[in-house]
Amino acid sequence: MNRPIRTVSIFCMFLFLALMVNVTYLQFWHAEELNEDPLNARVAEDAFSRQRGEILTGEGRDQIILARSEEYDDRYKYLRVYPKPRLYAHITGFLTLGTQTGVESTQNEVLSGEDDRLFVTRLIDLAQNQNNKGGNVLLTLDPEAQQAAYDALLETVGPEGEGSVVAIEPKTGRILAMVSLPTYDPNELATHEFEESEETYNRLDDDEQEPLVNRATQTRLFPGSTFKVVTAAAAIEDGLYSADDQVPSGATWQTPGTTGPDNVIDNEGRFGCSPAEVSFATAMAQSCNTAFAKMAVELGPEKMRDQAESFGFNSDYLLDLQPQAQSVYPTSVEGVDGESEELNDAQTAQTGFGQFEVQATPLQMAMVVAALGNRGSLMRPYLVDEIQSAEVETLETTEPEKIRDAVSPTTADQVTELMVETVDNGTAFPAAIPGVSVAGKTGTAQRGVEGLPPYGWFVSFAPADDAEVAVAVMIQEAPGKEIAGGQLGGPIAKAVMEAVLDD
Image (tube, rainbow, N blue to C red; front, side, top):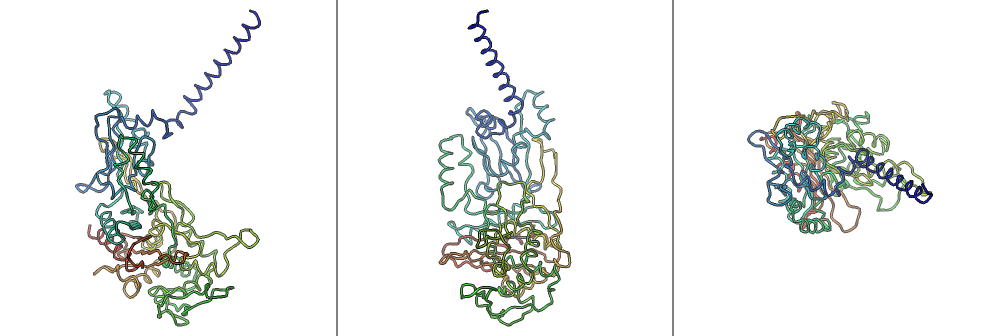
């Protein structure tokens, strides 16, 4: 063989070997990643060409379908349909040719039929020469509580408003309601008219109100005075005070190490907070900023942070919806030399009533009061109750999981006592339910931007001595209304608690 032919032969051999290596890599090592890539057109088209499982919620005759696949006369065979679109949009999410969100995303393997728990079902479908059917996902949501939360929030903030409601069953961590406004219609995105779907997505994505954002888990704001229940828990758990003690207060307080009126903490006209000392019950019921600022400084930033983290701050716990924002109690601040350093007294004082750099999602604040209502035990929140086959056979049920004891039962009982006083004789009275002992706390958080209205918050649980439901309400925008956590958030929380308790 002459040299040119030998050279060409060797070159072809190397090309053949390279081709074999590439095919082997794609079919074995890289196959799973390619199959899961939402930009893979073949996989995406396949998802539209099979009977995807249903997303359900409720029990027995009250069970409702939140998402299903209907036969459709085009190349994709099935169309994803959302029967109660705006009410559950941020939970179900949506399925398009290139995108999945919400439960459609986190439970995709089950819904598409690819989950290992559906192996037997796939074999049966194969033996019967039928298309692979997806499994069903049953959620924990209480339809009546979800409807009550949606209706009450929409009535309060209006069609141009923004806010969220989360309700949790304290003993288990089951999410009973999760609402975010503004909302959207996922049916407009699930259409097979993909150009229209893309235009709709771009319009929603560009909207300044961010309707695609689930404010329950993705929006974190200053929690304001609702964070005082964390400060109170830290003080009682540390042994600094008990619920029956007198605590330092005062009409105003110049934060330590500062000068000037901008660093003066006041109580926004609540004269019951003016004495140098008030009862702990008064401090909570009247929401005395000075009392909780001084309490936080006495505890120090490390103990405050430890308590916040015991309730779930600086961590993620909900596995059933992604992405989500992490609630924050600051771990450090940037010093004058650019180096990280611990919070000073003035900054710590602000954190005592949920300002400075404390940020929380509605889910996080619901977790806080759920733990208090569960006598200190923090349960992992969860949204997926059961995984089912297409024939509605239960394949797996979520078992409640205790994360940790956020506080001792004694501390939880004392904070509950303070919160009941806040509903019975304080700022949280709008959440009072006749014949039911309710624990609650209001919050009106300043944005830190002059001229802009505050954020409204409300947290509560009931019955106070044996909690069945814990609620967090966040009002971000309510055009035409003066935002105050108690006046606007209290009635919403009451409506949700009543829906659960009357069920």
